[in-house]
Image (cartoon, rainbow, N blue to C red):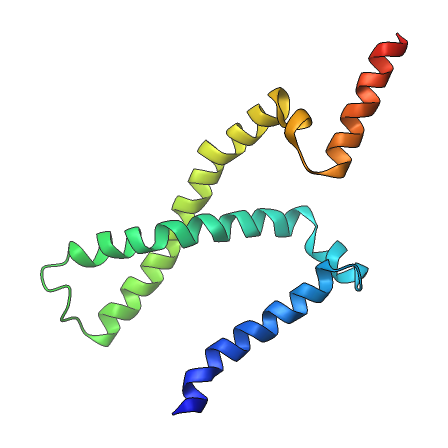
Length: 133
């Protein structure tokens, strides 16, 4: 019983330890690989889908007449439908809400408030160029 209770916790801890090594400056190749724009977009989409999945599941299952008593095939179909619906909704939320807000913040105040060293360095260089001219 204890084995089954600890498998998810130890698996999650193992994944955490592998990713922790990537970002603690001991494995630069892994950090560079996970810092690519593709993985940043995937991470944002995963975060959005994790937020809206419970809502989508509630909407899908509560609209069925016998939502609690469905067959395995019906649950399987609803599961795939849920995955597709959540991914499409997450992508639309990213395109319609998050991406324009990010661009607006980058244009307006991000260079002043950012903790990203590259953004701050570019801002300082830009300000120095303005002072020279």
